[in-house]
Every structure is written in structure tokens, then in C-alpha cells.
Length: 236
Image 1 (cartoon, rainbow, N blue to C red):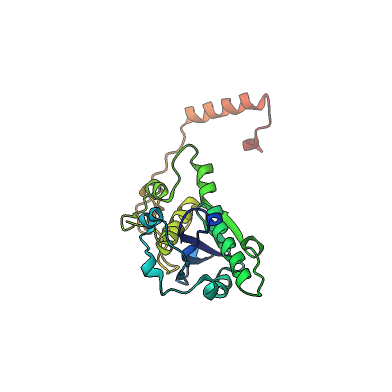
Image 2 (cartoon, rainbow, N blue to C red):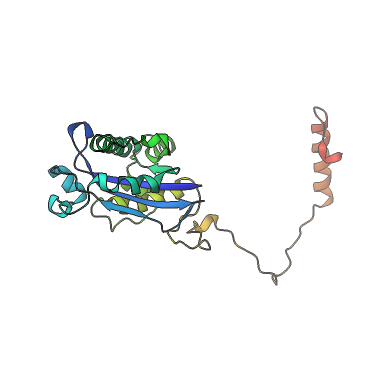
């Protein structure tokens, strides 16, 4: 199964107010293993970024001035995600912005672009987290604390960094491989109390304690009592 963990950064909170995508970050996972086939793109939004948004992601208008427009990267981006399951934290936000960009791209070209749900399935990890942890904070930082993920290097939000962190959170939430290593031989950390401990082949024989006569009699009495109301399969 091919999954794309996806995140975006934007100029503001609402596409209906003219806000645009300025960064897309994606990491690819196939059969729950990260492949290293990432997608990362900064985008010139052709408008100013809200001051509040800059405080969140730290991306400035000057930095984006020489970056491509969404219309320049749309085909490569859609080719990358097509047919995958998109894993997104608060999916309506990111999908809403992507679909808004596709509508704008249609107006600038003669092309027709399907909406994301037409060619991808979508899994919202925020919805999943709220089901698993009702009444608790379920933003990405809170989930990192809950699952013991070190995100101390995350001083600001960034689409690719957040997608990488979300991939680790998602694997822990769904109980599977958790290492960001690309090697299929590394399966991530397992809590000490649940780790499998293999016994050595040359170990001392295990001591076998057999039931004594009194214990066998008590066992037989118990079976007789059970047999009054139901069949006793141990005697068959």
C-alpha cells in the first residue's frame, strides 16, 4: 500500500479570503516503510503572507519571491500523489487549500484538474487521534509528547519536517514500524516491558513442577462440579 504523509504551509488560514499555499512537504511510505522518495516544494503565492502565519512557519515574502508558482509545479505534484492514500493531520485544512489552488489553476489554463478526493483516499490523523484520546489535546506537538517522539528540533512549523514527524506519529498510533530508517531490517524501538526476549539454546532445563495427589483430587472435584451444568471438554 502506498501512503503519502502530507503537510502544507500557507499565507493564512482561509482560502476563501485569498490565502495561498507557500510550501508542500510529503514523505512516501510503502507497506509501512519510508522509501526516501520525498516531495518538497516552496511556492510563490503572489500575495503577502499574514504576520501571524510568518510567526508560525517563519517563511518570508522575500524568500518566496524567486520560487515557482503553483501552476508551474501542479502537474509534478499531482503525479506524485495520484493513487495514494494521503495521511494528513487536520485534512480538511490542507485538502481545502490544495483544491482551491487547483480551481485557480483551471482558471489560468485550459486544463481541468480533478479534486484530490477523486484520485486519492484521505486519512485524517486528527480525527483518529480524537477517537483514540478523547478530551485531550491532539495537535502534533501533543501527540509527540504522548508517544515519546523527540521534536525538540522543531522550533518553527515546516511542511516537510511536519510530514516527517507525522509519519512517525502515525506509525506509533497504528502500532507498527516506527523507525525513520529506510532499512527494512530496522523495526524501531519497542518498550522494554513488551520486547520479545529469546531464550538461549544452551540454557538450563526449565524446572517442571507437577501437581501432587491432593491437587489432582481437588481438580477432579472441580470438574465434577462443572459437569453438573455443562460438558467438561477436558475429559473428552
